[in-house]
Amino acid sequence: MGGCKNMTLESVYKKGRELLSEAGIPDSDFDSLYLLEHFFGADRTALILHGEREADEGICERFFSAVEERKTGKPLQYIVGKWNFMGYDFLVGEGVLIPRDDTEIVVETAIGYLKNIKNPKVIDLCSGSGAIAVSIAKMFPDSEVTALEYSDTAVGYLEKNIKLNGAENVRVFRGDVTRCSESFEDESFDLVISNPPYIQSDEIDTLQVELQFEPRMALDGGDDGLYFYRIITEKWAAKVKKGGMLAYEVGEEQFEPVAGMVEAQGFCDVKYSLDLQGFKRTVSGVRTEE
Ligand code: GLN
Image (cartoon, rainbow, N blue to C red; front, side, top):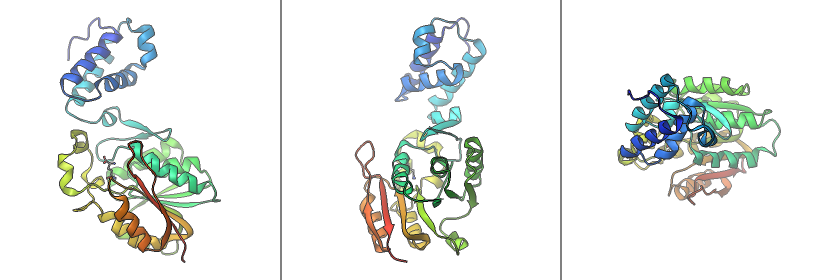
């Protein structure tokens, strides 16, 4: 990159912001500040108090090479290699879906239900980085959580995230959600929870550049985006205990069709929660029949 000689922290931050903004990165201010904190350990307060301090040259070079990566559209989360979800840190990188704020909504639905249950048994289908499984396991130390994931790369992150967070009550099951419900023959769960791939196949390429860096396998919900809801609802409904809950994250406009599937399997009290933008982001239902 060059030009790192005699730069102050503030000039590093401003230059980062300018380069990102020129490259059309929408949240250039946030991203530059985030990278500054990541590399220099300097947040906005430090910038205000010590902005005129000279920036270490080696760290400065690393900061600007991260800016160059970000300019290509690569998500900030992959560049820094971790992201916070529900107050816990998760390691992420190419090959695993980045945990989203929206997904915290389905975890909150689960919390509301699990707080009244002793030693709950939970299974998180399409677990990815383990954001849902690990945060539930941490918040409910008496729970037994199974994290089911198909991709080897994602399983690698999942295992690291279990260790990173000391979530000893999570067990990993590597398998295909569309096939392996039979492997849980004698088991039933208080909560079956999932954020499956739900974007329509032909929409993915039209979405923002950051998404193109994420694994298609974690995004692609088939022609109508509903493929996994159909299969999971059909194959896993019987694994929910009487009085237990099935909870999904869904995409915009997917509440009605998914709620219909869940009701058709005999679940009642089928509800949604709204995300911060006002979209129906979850579907949950309670099983009444054996
Ligand atoms: N929430 C993601 C997005 O729209 C999609 C994740 C998923 O398919 N489960 O960016």
